[in-house]
Length: 233
Figure (cartoon, rainbow, N blue to C red):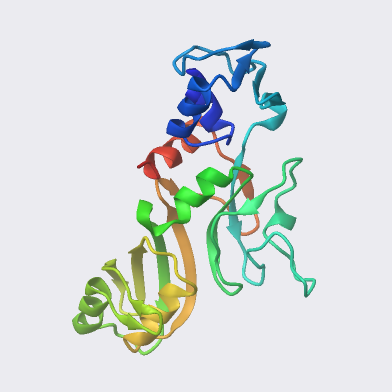
C-alpha cells in the first residue's frame, strides 16, 4: 500500500493532506524519514507522524449497526438511555456517523475515523442516504411525490431535490444527501403525509442487508474503501 493511502486509512488525514505530511518530512517508516508519498508499506508497518505511532494499534475502524427503535444516536446520553455505542463493543473509541432519531431504525455507521465521518456527513460531498418510510393519509399522490422530488420548504430552508419511489400506496423510498435533523420526517409532513415508521436502508454504497435489529458487524477493508471513494473530492 502507498504510504499516503496508509495514512489516510489510519485516519491521520485525507489522502492529499497525508501527501503534504510526507513531503514535509514528518512521517517515518521503521524509524526512517520517508518523503515519497508513493513509498510502499505493508499493512503492519511501523509508521509514525511527528513521532506518534499510527501502526496497527491506531488503525481506524468502521462498524455497521442496525439501530433498533428507542436507541439514541450518540456516544453518551445524559438521560441514561441506551446509545448506539452501547450496542457495538469495541476497544476503539467509536462515534456515530451522523444520526438517526430515536424512533427511527436501520443502518448507522460507527467509527473512530473523524476525517471519514466528516466527509460522509457533510452535504458538500453529497453522499446519498436511502430511507423507507411508512406514511399516514395514504395514498401518496403524484403531487406529493413531485414536491418531494423538487424540494420542499422547511423552517430551515428549502430541501435539495430528492429521489423518491412509491413502493406502495402508503410506503415510500426516499434518497437524500443533506442529512438535516429529522429531515425525511419533516419533508413527508410538509406534503401532508406524516411518517409512521422510518428505516434507513443504505448509506452511500453500503446497504443494511441482512443485519437484524441490534446486530452489528465490522466493515471489510473493501467496504471502507468504497465509502472513502463515495466521499472523495
